[in-house]
Every structure is written in C-alpha cells, then in structure tokens.
Image 1 (tube, one colour):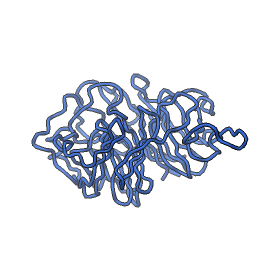
Image 2 (cartoon, rainbow, N blue to C red; image 1 turned 180 degrees about the vertical axis):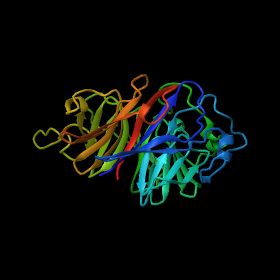
Image 3 (spheres, rainbow, N blue to C red; image 1 turned 120 degrees about the vertical axis):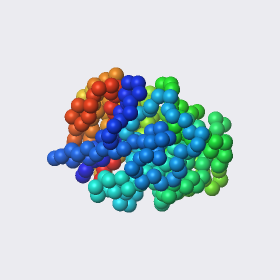
Length: 351
C-alpha cells in the first residue's frame, strides 16, 4: 500500500516563494516521491495564479497579511478518483493517478484549514477560529454553515461571517483559536462529528435538528486530541504528545467494570491508548499528527515540532506496536532550509 502524506512548513519573518513548494509525499516500501504546488497568499496572487480557481475571488475589502502563515497541505480526504487537500485558504482537488491539481476550491470562509472531509460531493471544512462548520459544493458554492456557541447552541447560516474574507486573516498568537478549536471533521449519516482540541471530545451537530451535543471519551491519561478517523467501527485519534487512541462503544476498547451485572457509573465512548514510547519506536516523539488505518496497520506522522530538527517521519505500526514502516523526511533533501522555522507532517492516507 502507498502512503500519501501532507506536510506544512513555516518560516522566520516574511517569506514569498518564487516557485511551487513541496507539500505532498507519496511513499511505499521501495520509493518516495515529492510533489510541489503553487500557494497564492495575498489577494493579488489570487488574480495571478495559474491554479484553476473554483469558487470566489478575493473581496475588494481583503487586505494583505500582516505576517504570512504556514505553507503546505493540511487535511486529506479521498473521494472517488480525487484526493482533496486542505491549505490555509482553499482546498486542492488532485487527480489520484498523478497528483496533479485539477481545481483550487476557495471562498471567503476558508481560513487555516485543519481536517477536511468530502462526502457525497459536499466539502466539509472548519472555520476554526469561529467554531463554524462550512459546507461547500465542489463548484465552490457555500451551501450552509453551522456555528457552535459555548452553550452548545447552534447558529445556522450566520450572515455576519460573510462580512470578512477570512482567507487573508492570520493567527497572530500561539495556541488554539475558537472556543472549541475544531481540528477534524467527519460525517456520520446526518451528523457532523468534530474533534475539539480544547475539550478532548467530539462535538456532534445534528444537521436536521440544528442541535449540538457532546460525545465524551473515557480517557485514562492526559491527551491532546488532534486528528481522528472512523474506521472498522472505531474512532482513531492522535494525541500530539505521541499517543494513538482507539475509541468506540465496544467493550473491546477498555471494558466496563460490572457489579452484579449492573453498570453503576456513567461513561460514553470507551478507549484504548497506544503510547508510541511503549511500541517498537521506544521513545516519545515530540509531535504526532494525522492518522489512517488499513487492516491491522495504523499510519501517522511524528516529530517536527517548532524549534526541533527540520524533519518529520512517516510511521506505520500495527495495533500491537510493531513497526511496519518508518521513513524520515528531511527538508534539506527537498528544499532550501534558509529561514525555515519548522516542517511537520499533517495528515496521512493509505491509497
């Protein structure tokens, strides 16, 4: 199986690339290929780009960035013959056969994209800093928005969001944005399941009722939930401190204690924790992000934290902790290290 991985990179001060930048790696047991893409940032660059822009050109009120954010691809979603890759201000639709960009889907509600999802030709992204799930057609039309408030109330189609072109707003502080900081989004029936970094659980939005509720996870250790994916009847998450959580309603994932055949205590999703330092890796990585599952294998990316070595690694392990694949990606092998602050993996998919 090939492994497709997106990665991002950030720079010291202003950085204006003069050519496409490596942002996707495709790796199997015998080879590794890198693919480069153009990343328009400021409004003028949107009008000059050679990308096939689908959606919306910048608003007249859009301003240049005060400081340019990270470059590269973030969340991944696979739908039919296409691979969809998030970026700071749009979603790249790539042909799965040759990874060439066929469309760049972008509109004013795309900003600092994290996990993305394509389901039945609808693109789901998150305006993370405003706790808003955005539904977009593959033609770039904004279909609906769902904004979650701190009392779990939901505002549908909040028109005040449309007053700004969020594509050109940068985060000027460290840490999470938004009340919940939604990192990953996935669809289960008519429900949107978003992982909340700040709460360490799911916020679930019922699109028919316009209501939100929590699905909590029984956690036996401190975790910093990041990405998640639903496979084989279970949710798989990464915790950025080097853990993989497997959660479900099944007893196999942290069985409940029974007293006289009666469950006495309340609990939602059960969980099992894989600590990477207790696998064949034998150490705690300084970062852990992105997850996918194929049969008994779990793929993720590790290392690449700010201020560390300018590299990250692709890791494939079994549920039992045996390393099946470990590939180091060093920036000096694919790009110029001058002014580079960090490079880190973001999401992975078996293809």
